[in-house]
Image (cartoon, rainbow, N blue to C red):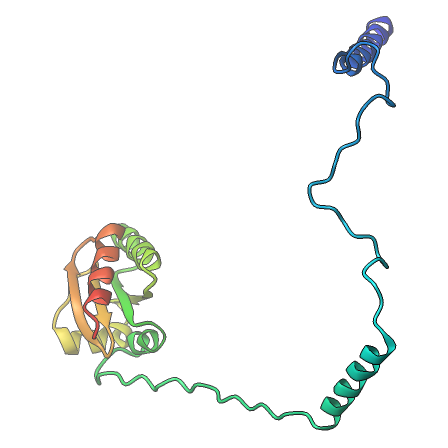
Length: 193
């Protein structure tokens, strides 16, 4: 086994030596190779010249006068306009509309497997379209109650698309895939004033 390993090592060294000599023309030496000319010559440090003493004194005088009389620059920060929303929105939807112009709301029952898939698809569609996303559990009175007051009885799963200031622009009862949700968001964004 040792002999086989030793022979393999000798063969590898021979192959490496062969590969190194294969790329050189016969009789070529290191001295006969022409040097490579740089496309972008690099300046050496210290060859740029030096400042004359008058110019240096003028530069120092200018910088010291600026230091004694600095200009005051005050920039006004742009204050964002407050977002005014319609009354009666669910608190989660209102919070999302403050941060996004278009929001996708997914109504779901956490115990139904199809509803979980619907929430995942609605979330993906909202992410693709750069919209806000709010999942609302229909079994929680606090989350679904304001929507029931506003829209009546809603099925689950359902997807709602809101646009500022709280207008409902699309409603999908049942399952809606990510492409449908993304298209609804794009349509809502295109019709914004």
